[in-house]
Image 1 (spheres, rainbow, N blue to C red):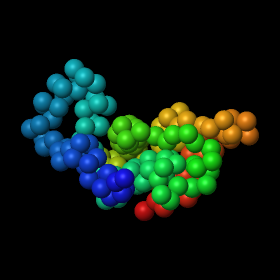
Image 2 (cartoon, rainbow, N blue to C red):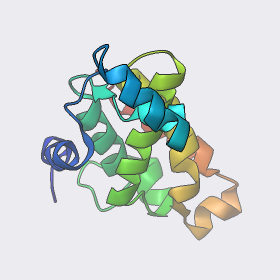
Image 3 (cartoon, rainbow, N blue to C red):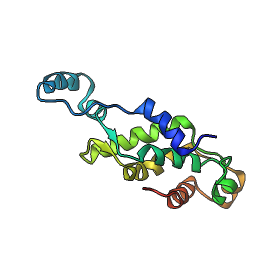
Image 4 (cartoon, one colour):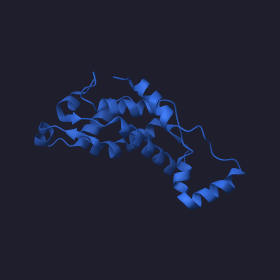
Length: 151
C-alpha cells in the first residue's frame, strides 16, 4: 500500500498545472475562452496547490480505508469500504473550486478539510452494524477529519 506521500506524488503528476494567471496580453485570449466555456472553469484551471495539500488529500482518503494499517476504530468497525483513489481527484477539484470561490488562485490544506465532508460522505460504504446503530457517514467523516492531522 502506498503512503500518503507516495500517493500525493501520483496526484501531483496527474492534477497540478504549473500555469499561472495570464499576463496582460493573455487576457484577450482568456476572455475569448471564458465566453466559450465559462469563466469559472477557466479560472479554476489556473489554481496551484500549497505544500502538503496533496499529502493531506491522500491521507484523508487512506484514513477511510479499513485495510489501512493505522485505521481508526470507527473506520474498522463502521465502514465496509472507503473512498476510492479516483475520489482523491474529485476532492482536489472541489477544493480548487472552494479556493476559487474564496478569491484565491491556490489551494490550501484548509480548503481540502473544508470541502471533504461534502465530497466524501456519499462515497463511503457503511457496515450493517453502522446502519443498525445509526452511525452516519457524516459522523465517520467528521471523526476522520478530527483525527487526521492537517498541516
